[in-house]
Amino acid sequence: MSKVTSLEHAMSRIKDAMTVMVGGFMACGTPELFMDALVEKGVKDLTIICNDGGTPTTGVGKLIGRGQVRRLVASHVGLNPEVGRRMNEKSLEVDLIPQGTLAERIRCGGAGIGGFLTPTGFGTIVQDGKQVVEVGGTPYLLELPLHADVALLLAHRADTMGNLIYRRATRNFNPPMATAADLVIAQVREVVEPGEIDPDSVHTPGIFVDFIVTAKEVP
Amino acid sequence: MDAKARRELIVKRIAREFKDGDVVNLGIGMPTQVANHVPAGVTVLLQSENGFIGLAPAPPDPALLDSDLVNAGGQPVGIVPGGCCFDSCTSFGIIRGGHVDFTVLGTLEVDQYGSIANWMVPGKMVPGMGGAMDLLVGARKVIVATDHVTKEGAPKLLERCRLPLTAVNAVDIVVTDMGYFEITAEGFLMKEIAPGVTIAEVKAATAGNLIITPELTVMTA
Image (tube, rainbow over all chains, first blue to last red; front, top):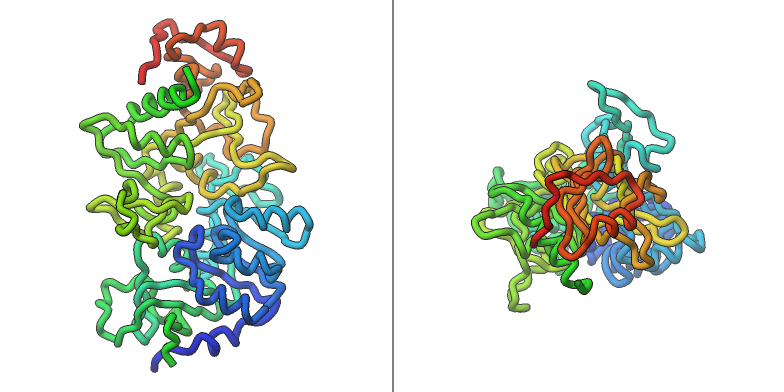
């Protein structure tokens, strides 16, 4: 049973006001095909969970620039001045989260874990409103899981069963996000038949992935 | 010294801290330049928090640039033979778990307790903390690379940080264009002084408690 589908079919599942995780780091590893499709579709009031705000012309920055994002959950937004502008005019809500905490909260969301303890952010404004738990004399912040309606990934190669391989630094947030959403859609550069990817080389097991879309729109 | 020479002194001095085989994470800006001055005979592995170890300069030929390989600032880079790639959870497990020997970061303020403020200026600059908070609590040794005073001439080495903190009691060493300082229970312990700078000038430019070691030496690149 092949998971390969059309871009149109995959994107039809994304609705207004959904929470969407988007892989990538400064847009390296972001599925730009899906960003462009969502711009065209005009879906709005999205909550986007992504490492950063992209740039005005790349990654989730494309959606932010069109005013399609109501809330952004990210670790860094400095490379997209549009984020700061929209924050100031209150048309975009931004939750800034330390990068390691963001990654681990997503992992928790996909791994059935009720949260985790981290020393990161203790004694800073990141601590505000959070439970502090002391273990062995060290104070930790209790950080809670993140989950999404949809995760949008970029992988280098997939087989039709959805097993994914990433390339170089594009991997970043894609593997944890693959586990933490109700619907997981991967843009891939190449699709191969089952057996052509060595089981030991799989980065994201195919069971996490619902749809595979190639840039060439294999039907 | 002009600004360029001052920065070169700072980054060259920091590069001498590393031992052969150390795993090092360098912040964006002045800290990135430390990689260009690691002494002969010492090889360090650079960790890039976006997901790999073995960061190397980008190939000079633009035709050989790999758009899948960028540093944590989004700039094209290379990877050394034997380098390896991983996801963000593993990357920050490496960082929080104490597997990075050194991190080098710039700063807005650092105080005598080793607390540091380098991620936001309320009402002005809110770019986000990125990986800085994790690096500060997780790296075995934290080195701050900074000009000693702001562009306006105000001290950056303080008794207490005034800006929102990035981490508490996290910094081990501060290297500035005026000297080399260790964070100790008593405050900033100056162990080396930059060439052409007097102790009186360092005292005037430092707001936190400053102690001068009796074995003070001249800081060399």
